[in-house]
Length: 172
Image (cartoon, rainbow, N blue to C red; front, top):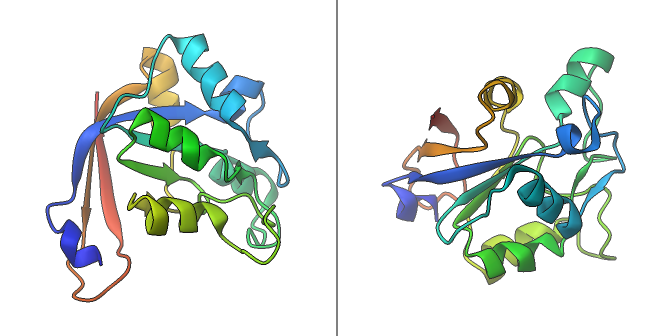
């Protein structure tokens, strides 16, 4: 329940700008983000996700929408493969946020529409933050060459709720 997170999230976060890694402005729907992509980003920027970190994964969804217009992301979106859940667990990540739904769509697991949600939230107890806007954050991070920063996310206290709007704030 979201009411159990009334203190919010205050932690170090690491931005994984996967379009920047692949040298494109945004990922096309159907692009799977793999553990290899996350490892490559860490090597490229000499940064490592540490226990308690928030992992933020940019697909460039909002940049694509600005360039080409909106589309039904439930029919096709770039996103992390479900195997990323094990990677998050092995690194001790506390939470994950994405600019779509933290899922590759359509699902790669037959009969399970949101496998990463099931693995992260239900199996690992890890909060997910969907549909965040990382465009300004990506610009500032690239300009300053800093991919880690303080993250604050304060959810609304919705009694019995499973989710909430948040106002994410980062501090470099």
